Each structure stands twice: as structure tokens, then as C-alpha cells.
Image (cartoon, rainbow, N blue to C red; front, side, top):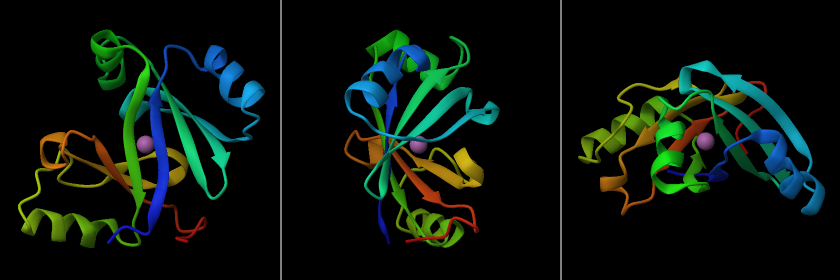
Length: 139
Ligand code: CO
């Protein structure tokens, strides 16, 4: 069902300040940077092999990541698995009774389609599934 880990999402207060650690100290390349209005975040993807770390800074306090930071502070936010067909994967999970946050895919970073599964169905780990934009391909 899952091809590989696409990225791990890390909630941060502020992108520029956190790049100090990830880009300068860990020497990871910034692959992409984008404001994703639909998710209320500014996001940066950093390369680590074929996978990514996704830094997420909230656009406001009243966003999911803003609320996460207020409650828990910066830290690991979610794990994202790559899938070839997000509609088919969601249908399979729904049929199996897995609780979903997103009944339908929504727009994610870099033109991907994403959906979140409910942490109560995933042993406490907020889990995202990602179908990459067609031009980026699934691998
Ligand atoms: Co993500």
C-alpha cells in the first residue's frame, strides 16, 4: 500500500530560524519552499536521500500547526507515506474502517494530493498519505 516514506513533518515556530539547523548545520538542500494556504502553513522540503524533511511553520495561531505548537511546542508532527493512487488507497482504508481526517484528498505541497488519517486509528502517529504530482512521479 505504501511505497516508501515520503517525508517526516516537523512543526517549527519560524522557517528562517529553523533552517539554521537543517540547512546550515545538517547540510540538507532545500528542494522546495511554498506557502500552502489550504493547510495554513509555510513549508520547506529538505532533501535527505530520496526522502524529505518537511518543516512546517503556521500562517497563524488559529491553524492546525499553530494549535499544535501552542499545545506541544516544536517537534515531530507527522509521517507521510507515498502512494501511487491516493483515491484507491483512501477507499481501501475507509473500507477497512480506518478513521480518516480527510475523506477526500486535498492539495498538498508541490502539487501533490494528500490526505491525513486520524491519529486514533494510527496508534497516535499523525499519518499523511501523498500522491506526488504527475510530473514528479511515484518512485
Ligand atoms: Co506533510
